Length: 154
Image (cartoon, rainbow, N blue to C red):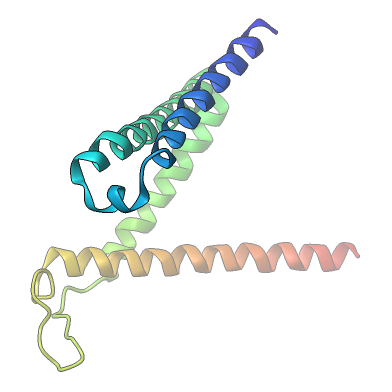
């Protein structure tokens, strides 16, 4: 109960700071705000930094609590590590299926900055495509199995 009260106070403080920074933007002349870089830096930068801080804090807290939960429950940790291992194997499989051939634009010319033959960019883009296809095929398979089970139960 006490932690819930603290959490509500923290949420209220974050909302008040965000509202204050947001209102500061609207108190400025909109035409001047679009042209004056110093004014933009003075008024808009704080809300951008505040938002970035909140995003990073949310990511760190979410990852931290997830890891804490996994460490407290060894059975879930085993399942998670097994799932990550399977995803790693699918990634390795996708990497070996991918090629690193030249990437051509609409005129038939090689795209600069990563489109050259043998480029690691090409290899990883191909890996991403094959990885997505493999995971999509697995998802489709589970969907069909689940659909079949649902039809059999009906």
